[in-house]
Image (cartoon, rainbow, N blue to C red; front, side, top):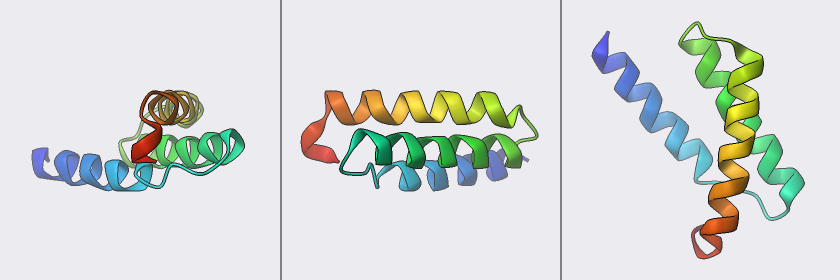
Length: 67
């Protein structure tokens, strides 16, 4: 079970690596990754989408050269 969690974490990180060029794209990509992660882990999909969207936008704004 622990291996599955690690694999999912790596997959989500890879998904977030494609930040998006605009704030709208960043929101959509982050929400998608967060919702997918929450669905796979049997969590709250809406909360996962919200957290993923916020995290991706913040990451891209703080690290513009990495997006």
